[in-house]
Length: 384
Ligand SMILES: CC(=O)N[C@@H](CCC[C@H](N)C(=O)O)C(=O)O
Image (tube, rainbow, N blue to C red; front, side):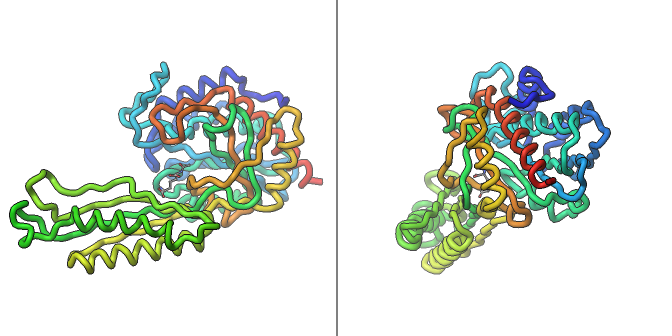
């Protein structure tokens, strides 16, 4: 096993501190401050850093400067009220690291601290990116131009996975995660008295038709050999039982394993929204927003190297995984930079985004050690 620089105990302490201060995407000011306070204790002979909004970019100059290996973590939390009962639960009311980004950040710090002490064979760029959950922080950062001078030639990142045993590494060639697209639909009719429906235009009924018709997309438009999901997670309309609602707001998300399928589903959602508006003689405002949530498509070469290392390392348990319908704006970075996304098992009976999610902390140390091992071998091979 690799001798890590931050000890298991220190890593767990950091994780718990980060867990207590979750912040929503693009508002991660306290998190950024905490991360900077830790990075600033690391040796800085070959370490350079800059901040952009709530992001942090750290560059390490390697012994050979001809190639740069990138490593990315996300840093944002979710609008979830924590119910784990843990002694180090969130102190930010209504916010929680319910997607495990506290684990992602801690592992990134563990890896960074190792290479801050042990100069890497090649240059390395560590990206602590905001807003993975809500605002394509990776895309925003890339498009800001701040990464340009330290642009990686290849890049790696993981997501924690409650279904895998703690510390297990999962990966696959090709598509790991779906591309997503947010749906925001507002139907606008005319409110009125419940007793006089003929004088109003009821948007509860229009919205309900939209919701039910959308259910036909996956069953009738998606090739059954492929995959697609349309979830409408929020329907908000009306104020009370005896007033006809003049507006309905419906929000949801599309998921598909290819960009073509994502675009096809978007087209069908648009057509159904427009048809419902026509049928109910109302207006619809439809926002289909994909941002940087492209399918996460692993590069063939980097993924082969990754799977080779992980499946042959005596200290790592590796599992080939199926594609998942979760989204990740790392898909955008992978559309620009070849690289690999993978899973780190954190073993929990609760799913990502659950208010009960409590990842097993032993995954942190195992993850840090496995990833350092891979990055060392990768840089050694490229540098030859
Ligand atoms: C890993 C994970 O849970 N990611 C999020 C990404 C959000 C994508 C976007 N905001 C959307 O809802 O379409 C996920 O929900 O999969």
